[in-house]
Image (cartoon, rainbow, N blue to C red):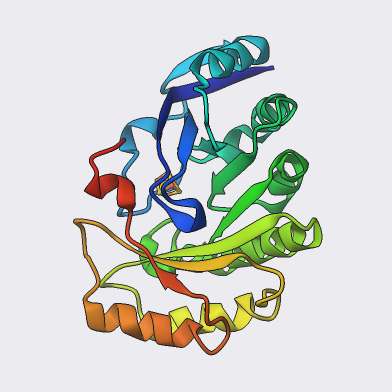
Length: 237
Ligand code: SF4
């Protein structure tokens, strides 16, 4: 088995419920999708980065692991494109007692289920229609898969949190529709957070919009947080 890694580096986690933690990022190459706010465009080509055997990639991770690393993130690109190799690499990291974290758009619940046993922290990202991740016609299928991933992560008792990126183009009606579906599965007892992440530098939502999104989530889950990408503020990669 081979894997393509675009880059590997240590930085400060800038998103989600574990922001501020020292993290080793393993950025897998390749993503066939097209979010308009994507900030890893160079890693989208499936042939970007460099190819490694699994043994070589494990060795690369070991060489890059610094002391006091809180977790190792498997990110992209879209890491589920290379789900089999992510599973092997995550097993290797877990065997050293270091927590693993998956950053995925959860577009394919079968691939997600393959990786899930090797992951400790699961970010379930719901892509809104306006993200342009996929066309409108295929969006319901994407949401169905993401909901299945959410259900599986909760049933597996993983530390699971939900993230949605919102922009000035995100419509509150479709956001509420998504919440209705999410909170048929999620509850205060079974998720560790709900993060509303505003886009940075591109179609940024106004404060009034952010408050509307917050108010929509609050009745379901009053631990909701609006958190911008910290790493962009401190100029980390
Ligand atoms: S899923 Fe992630 S990597 Fe792919 S286009 Fe969207 S933001 Fe970029």
